[in-house]
Image (cartoon, rainbow, N blue to C red; front, side):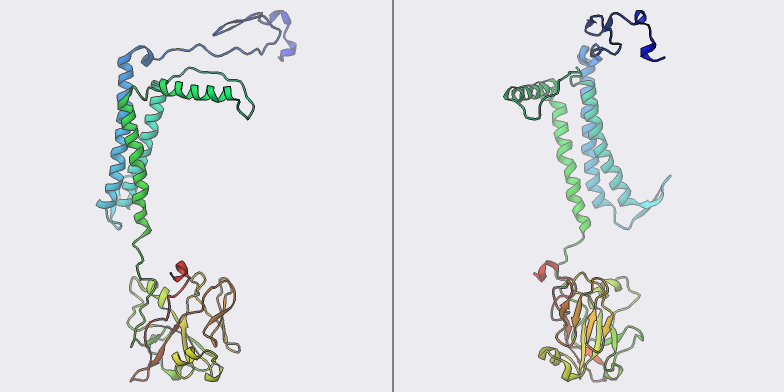
Length: 350
């Protein structure tokens, strides 16, 4: 039955509220007002309030201990340690301990704050009218007064045990983020500036895994090589090849425009890094008529007849060249490392 169908004489003439009675009205949806405030046991019994204080302090203390455990986990557990934990099965001991301790540290801070607010802070409901966005000086003064009153009602100044343990928990939790910086890995030092290429290292064909000889490289052909002694089965093979990958082409000596490139070549055979200087993609597209190579990722184009300079695309640097020669066995060999760092222009090669 809708409200329009209710006989008027059946409507309540007076509506009781927690703060007295509202005068009789024809509006069946009159605002009943706020419910009566019911004091909590902590408001009436100081011993109960002290128990709540100790409970909150215990939670903040547990948060501090969990944060210390988080940091200790980095020291105690190696990255590759696997343990069996029911019901999760075999998991990383480091990841499990980090997740458990960090979760506990954050949980106990939140639980302590909630318990503090529910049992010790003032729970009196206050109704406030909506105000214009721009506050008047009176409103600003009232806000500051309310803030001061809230600080007083929170008892943060009087209950020093809660205050001190809360500050301790909040001060320790950010240390977890500082320790996480270890996951960024060791400092690169000069590892990005050097490769496995060195004087006397033979150029090994990536397809046949045999040393390359000048007669193996014909004009217009493209070959890929790796340094002598690098094992494809080694655990760091991909890491090393990410810097040492080499492409080799043979150009008619008269077509080479750059003098230093001609000096660093052998009978027109030139060796350049295969790693694009934009974001490190491998280059594999070669146009023999123009001597251009193209990066398939973002179409950076390099002219191998002119010092591998950039003629199109976002790459900012030419491809590094490797100086090569021939050893006593007639095999192609490196005469040093690349002339500059390989790959993307990290820190502008600073």
